[in-house]
Image 1 (cartoon, one colour):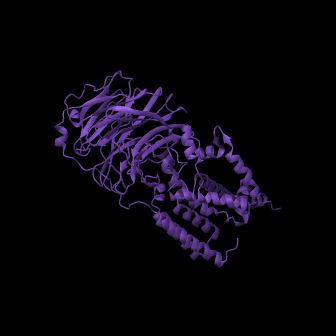
Image 2 (cartoon, chains in turn cyan, yellow):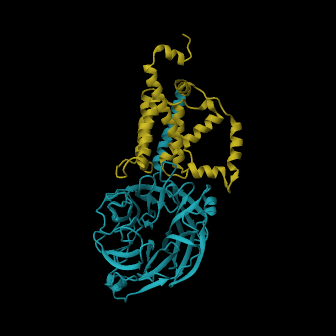
Image 3 (cartoon, chains in turn brown, purple):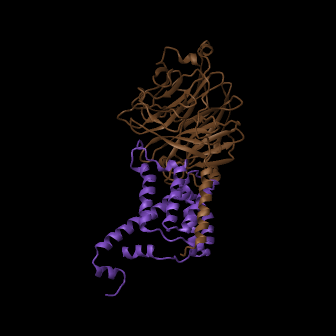
Length: 389
Length: 198
């Protein structure tokens, strides 16, 4: 190959153009800030009488798991989960239901493997954990795990949006989060809104090693940042993140370490740019998903399976000091070992009612609603839900 | 045999072209549906998308091999393997997640990658070792990243992919072994392996 001065000049010019263009392309605010909701005086909440309301959901499939809930702009609650003949089967689809005034208004199959194949132009063998959320324009967004080949450790995350409340999906963006064939990134817990209109998506990696991740994404599904969450109690995954202020957030994580089976914890003080080690919670964790929400009174609430083994107890824990200490609250479900009440998900309505959905025995999704006063009752052991529906 | 193979890879200036006629049947095969999804869809599900650099190299290889850049030197292959491939992939497989080595995350905040490319380019010019065709390919990949041409928003995915990096690593390892063996080989065997008559 001959190198003429003109070809060298041309190449250098092109490279400078490339460097400048790529440099200018950096999107998003340099200093990300959480859109942490303001705290409402708890007096009004606590004056209400205790309220607990079970809500029956349809069971369209033999198996159901991993629900996610979000409030739509009209005040109705949208619930998404994956269901099929069994977890990992090729007939698994994302099911949805809409609840208003304590009743199911509508339920439907929202997304199948074939539909996602058409949207992403690649083979999809099965679907997994959905995370549903509503953007500032009221559009329903869905982050969903998909597997093309292999098991869950070969999965990827997709982001879709819907203009009709989750009935149909008009776009899909695959989030590329791993340098090695984009393998093994999953989501489980709700997104966190950022001040600049982007979202923080708690995610995790589970091929060979497991760790929690914090991914900042635009509402169109373009990734801006991805940070790992450190661990001091073994391999942690499925972070649930709650913003405390514009800069501070706390994450609780599922723990896969059977030698030290406690809920893991991490925190950020710079809007999610870096995550630091924090002492784990003194709540047992049997390698099971945890959900966390910051209530409008400023306290944190988690739903967890507080056992060393098994998922047959689902209990709530509350913290009034930004996650440093936790006190046991009400028990939602309890059964003999072998039962499963797992993968909880929270949402709180504008009037303060807290909704909790969770997997019931892998056969269906259960939903209940309660207020803050009910949480504070002294009887923490008696299960709130009947074990047999 | 290894010596000849690596010499073949490193020594030849031009590769024999498959020609444009390869692309048409390849495109037809890729859109053929298999189990409801095109073969391209199966490949994308399995491998994802190649980087812009790989795509350009494949394109030049099949369409205009005379415009292909020179094959990278052994030293370049070793440097890329050590300073790009290992930091990109090792954290995924071997290192504890607490070890703060995650080169891939810099692809979303690419300031330091861009500075590194600029420094390497400047050094190449000053040392009169500029490779215009490689520079063009890198520049096109940077421009493609600025317009978000691929699904990924990470600059690394425009520059490299596992297929490209494993090829470079293979060249580095095979070239190093050959170089090591060659330096310890008696002159008579070297002449035999190079095809010279003695």
